[in-house]
Amino acid sequence: MTYPVCPECKSENTYHDSIQFVCPDCTYEWNSEETTQDEDILIVKDSNGNLLSDGDDVLLIKDLKLKGSSEVLKKGTKFKRIRLAKGDHNVDCGKIMLKSEFLKKA
Image 1 (spheres, rainbow, N blue to C red):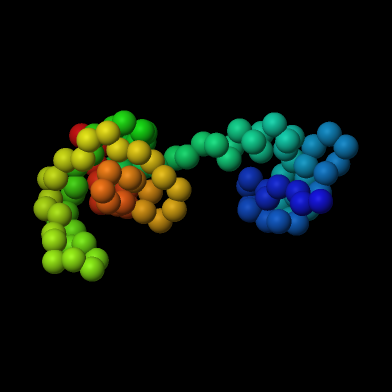
Image 2: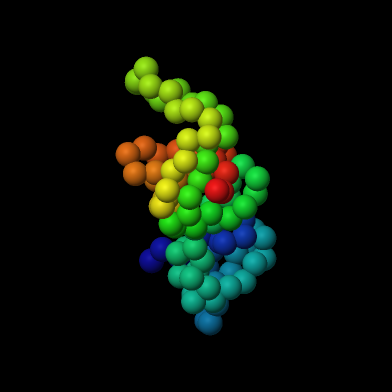
């Protein structure tokens, strides 16, 4: 049986103690309902620290050269109705995926 990873320290060394989970590394305790709720939340911030959400419009803050192409995305390019994704490139702008650190909320 596999137990969830600790939400505080991300340790895999956890165990179930009758009604809750316990992490022996950081002594954090949580119940199983908290685990399922935390995994669904995706927090993405732009270059200014503003929270981004699905459907937002964003602007590019610097010129970016696309890998494998001679195309350059210019500063100030607006992307409408973005979607958030998990991973290194966490903003889906339709045809391309970008990192949120190069964007600001419009």
